[in-house]
Image (cartoon, rainbow, N blue to C red; front, side, top):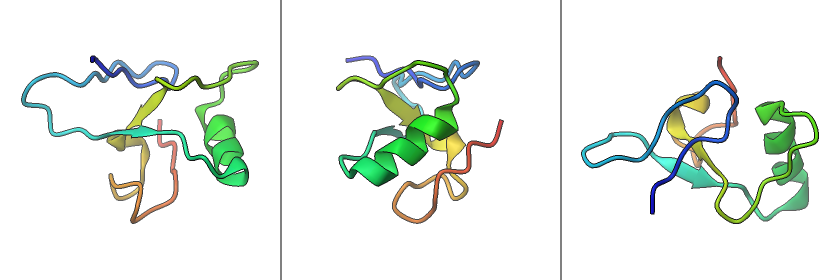
Length: 71
């Protein structure tokens, strides 16, 4: 399956040889809402296939940092 980052303007995709990681939205409701707010797409709701790429995290790793949403 091809994963594409859901952040507006981001064109990152999982392709062979990529060093990017793609993360699912968290199940924890509070944390999930923070991610949705950071994506900043009015009226948008993630589905099971929605992913964020590692370029939008401070450390590049979801486990070691908070979502930074650097643009």
